[in-house]
Image (cartoon, rainbow, N blue to C red; front, side, top):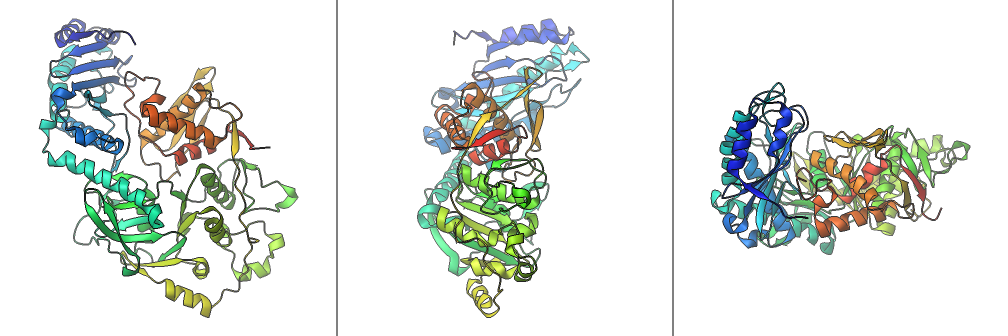
Length: 579
């Protein structure tokens, strides 16, 4: 990179006054870097018109002035947590100091990638020994297609300095707040690492608040009716966090766990918390000390999805007309075939824990009772139900399963642990469930044949992000990713929780192409490992086409969600490894 020239902020002020009332393209004159004394403002991109994507800016404060203690960003997890804290501080200041929309289109709107209840690696803020930098966007104000230079001057010389002063300096905060944010995040990370050595797949601390405000809000439910979590004695364990110390709560052991209980008693709520336990949460969320293995995957049926050469033979075989299920493909999967493919794809990219809720599963995939087995014998039924493979998954591949099951007691026969939810309080009923299974045997036959078998990989042959010769990649909230000439439906990927993760996935696909990782020889899993290796080394912004300028709107997805997005690409072309 060449020498960066930094002009005085007075130069920016003069330029804004000069272009006031001119055509909107005159805003291009303000591109550049400006010294405000206490910080430097980088205007990296100026939008083409008031309705175009907003302009991209950065504000940087030298660490010698920002004065954040080095202990708050001394490790990667602490750096992520402090960056998250500062981003939220900037967003809070925005709500206080920014007037909002004023003029045509998005005029006057300031945005920063604040995120929700999760603390995850983002590119909205960067903290290191040299500086603190916030990346944000601004809709440059206009009346029609005329520059409102005077309004812009107010934003640049009144609002933005207040935002920086209120968020990018350690002195702007009560010292307890960033310390708590960093330490709570670090504790969750360590607790998650303690699961496997203790042969646990999940942990929920006593006192956790599991219910959310509503289906539209991820904030904790509050009020007199809230029941805080209390572990049953049989599952209570102690884990040690570096900052909080000993944390007591329910440890869910490896193996097969079945969660039962009446409707509205908290079964699905508990499962949802375990699903989100792959992420760290902000202080006060209620789930700060509820963690799951980081490779946990929520499985569901997904009617209509495309499947490309997935080996679903452990679950489905002997299809009519001899269709091969070791490299199964369809453009319109049924509930059972989609759920089978989802499990195998999760194993291909690595998982040690599957979560399932009967409400979103295909019934004929989960169970075939004894009466149905007699009426439709195995030789006429291609599906081997999950109940007959769940123990093989654990025994052969070390994959545990937690299932919410309210309507089928047959799973008592294969469960290591049975938890009954009663008014949001868990109770261990494993012994009683096993006694019932012995006293009232189901008389159903195991149809698995004794083994799950090996899971091979798939080689990615090509990706095409172009439409009519032009690169076309974009994300649409959490619903879909536009990739070339098609849209990838990601609306049912329940553990994808932030639109900025979807943006990252879209550009990760393009990055893999540009780096030559999609070469017709590497498996999908190999490519994803290389992607995340680059991100671990160079940071998430390595995937951005705006690297070095404004890569401010990414949040890090997990490898699992990147793989699942690729699997839902209808133009995906793969071959079985070795095939």
